Length: 317
Length: 317
Image (tube, rainbow over all chains, first blue to last red; front, side, top):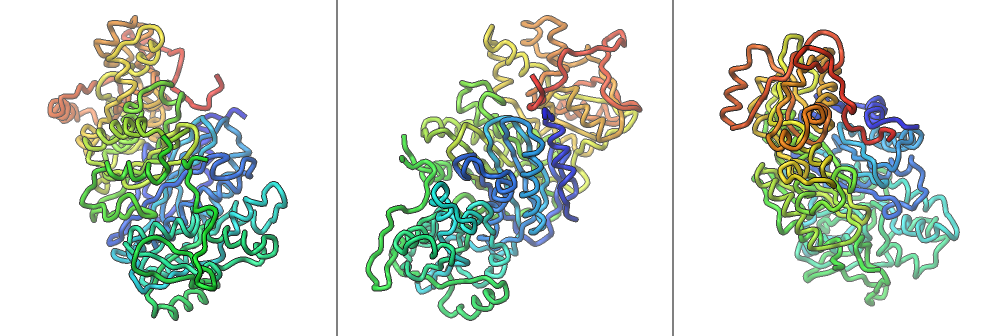
């Protein structure tokens, strides 16, 4: 115990992998990187706070994983290839075992996506993890929120509502498969890369499908009509939660980190090919129409409304 | 009160300036940037926590300024030109007046250095500000910590000990000129740019001169001999603090954000020209010698020792 800030940084530095384009990594005033010519830089920053973005008592391994995963998910939703990241870690006290666990999770995921941790800082304070992730994309191929067009179809990767189900059942009836979706989300990096050039707009589902798709509609000046009965559900979720509650979780629960995207109506075959190639379920859930807002309907085309529409960290409770 | 997270982001977005190389700024899953060809990317991340990196009760304007200044200082110490930054802002509650004040300070300094705020997030939690700053430098011209050579001279910009003096006198005898150095440090960006190509190594003085120069010596496998009587002091500091205490603050006090750099012995005229051009005092304070560590000596060449050697956020108190 009692390792100082410089020991902590040395501990992190000893464990990180590097890349050929990292000229100078952790250990100077700043990192020095050599971006490849002809690529655009994609930059995102997301923070996790104790008890807000993960339940108190979450293991350090899972916290490390999730802190990077939520940022990789933003790169994925832009169609970018991960390259480098920084980590600002605020800890109440220096705890080597906690740090090693955190790095186990963070660096495991970093290694899977060849993203190099190149800098950051450690400070004393309430537990908080701020990551900035940088990626690369070919000019013109980035997936933005403002490209959806009337007539496009709306799709989503994977299954929805698992993370919110895991959270809802946390204290009552823990379901490992759902808890794993909450604690160790899978950023859809390969899907994002494959969809660049096919999708017209994309967002990751962090605050809830209806809320996140709402951002796409607002930026694209269109509306979306979503068939809530078509939303993909996992077997684990269907097993433990009744249909009405399940659909609410799928439509409005956060933290799934799936990609919701729009594509021209004739792109179905290309999307099917991506799905087959990645072994990843991709489901058509609705259509872009003229107007504004997201309009969920049930199988009988009747309007459907959720008791909860996404997660706003500053909403009045 | 009660503005939501999306209102907060809209409030920030409405106020930020942009640059021609920002393809897509705040408002998507990530920012999209077009780095100029043939430049290297310099990346740094530094966090400020309430009561740790600034005194509780510091004004939001000053907090906003300092959060960016400490990151610009890292770019300066690398000889980089500021380009883009992200901001992760954790707040106990949404307070529009606080946010506007914070943005006044942050964006005032951002505008002075043409650095564009391109992304980030706002979360609910204890007050904490994590910034990642990105800059650009010509390949081969970055100022690193590992370039000091035996025979080089050691120099420092500006004056030392003011911020630590301001902190020491905070509750007893506030001195506005010193408090301003603590709250609104001046990142030496123009000096860093001008010294790229002249200096052999550089670090910014954030933890204290002896501690920070120690990092240069360790990375460069050399030692430094520092004349503590040559350390530059402001008139304000000399007026209120006796000589022995003053020298201790200059040698070991943090938060000055001056640049300490090494340069060949024949670079004095070039450094003088930079000083004259920028209207910035630059003082020769010692020499690089063989060995390891930083060795402060007084005017009689006797070893000098400070009661306090830099600031370590995790040191046992």
